[in-house]
Image (cartoon, rainbow, N blue to C red; front, side):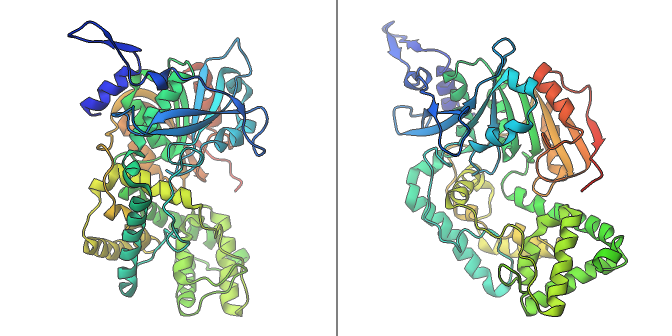
Amino acid sequence: MTVGAAVVLAATLTPATASATSGTVAEDPMRPYTQQTLRWGHCDEHTPAAFQCATVKVPLDYNNPDGEKLDVVVNRLKASSTQHRRGVLLFNPGGPGASGLGLPVAMEPVIPQEVKDRYDLVGFDPRGIGQSSPVSCGLTPDELNIDRPYHAETFAKDVRWARTVADKCAAAEGDKLRHITTRNTARDMDLIRTVMGEKRISYYGGSYGTYLGAVYMQMFPQRADRFVLDSAVDPTQYGRGTFQQMAQATEPAFTRWSEWTAGQDTTYHLGRTPAEVRNTFWDIVARADRKPVDTGDGPLTGDDIRAVRDIFFTERKAADWIAGLKKAAEDDKPAAPAPDPELPPENLLASLWTVMCGDTAASWPRDPEQYRRDTVRGKARYPLYGDFAYGIKPCAFWKPGSEAPTTVDNDVQALILQNEWDSQTPLTAAQSMHRSLHGSRMITVLGGEGHGVYGNGSCADAATTRYLTTGKLPGGDLTCQAPTAR
């Protein structure tokens, strides 16, 4: 962290400072924040009554705490046992851009009672997201579409899209954008810790939330208690590399799917060998490029089919869908719609770009032609999703955030959970996180599918609960087998 930031953060620990010249006590500019009282009350009609909500005031710029303030909305389910209570377990679901208020609500039914006895379950919408002073760029439905395949004739349009999104966000939110960053969200987490009266916090973060947790551990190592990082981002590749790793991981998942599907030819009729299955898929893509395949939710081009690359991490689901597309293409009749066709809420995409680009803009090339060259190479190497992943994004035109990104490299203890076949954060990303956190242990669920491990009934659940309740990490890294049923 910068020297200036270190001074401000140190001020959260002391209520006042003495003047070196006069001996008088100067008012600590962070005092209005650290001494605020949370007013807990009813959340909304969508949240169980047992949860309470409150608003924490945080400075937009921690180097200027007397300036603009933001609201950070938090919720909590108090620990079930006063005798066994240890503290707070803070949650973040990822994104960046995802609301965090719903995660403890969604996970509460599957969290073991002994964990709920020990912790207040605390969710929060990070700054700029959801109910916490949300950013908005006024993006149109087309501008919300993140998946843009490469074609030479449409590349100039993609460049205009990336530039337009960056320009609209800058015009709508101005200087505020510079301060909606991961490091400032980590500072907000520490302020939440302070106003809740806790010396340390425990944490469960998923996806990007693992990066946020790792940044907190780097900035506040003495205040991190028991940290569970589920489905981890690669902290060395966060930013442009996050997209590229998705393309890289999709190819082995596609190969695995073709091998499994070849063994189910009597059911799916997609090919008796993995090569035949892959040829069938690419034939469907080529047909759809010539004439879109009709579905119950509209026509799909070959590019549309390739964009649903995450389906190949779940073998049976992918085989069902591709078999339906094949029949629809051959019969010229509607097929099942593509999974999850809805566009995300505007704030989710606006805050995704705000946080990720603010964190990493300095590392993105500024020359559009660099993206053209990279995309051509990416598509050749990773045919399913390479052009989507390597293409130009708004970060190419984004103004950098208020400080450099964090290098994650510490000895703080943590537990990393990872499915072998995670569609969003590949196994290699979690392994990189593990190398960056020297005090961590990692549990790999071999054959595990899906994004998110804890609470889904895998072999990692017991060790995670043991860590949260006793503080004892496994003696070494563990691998275990996922249930065979898919």
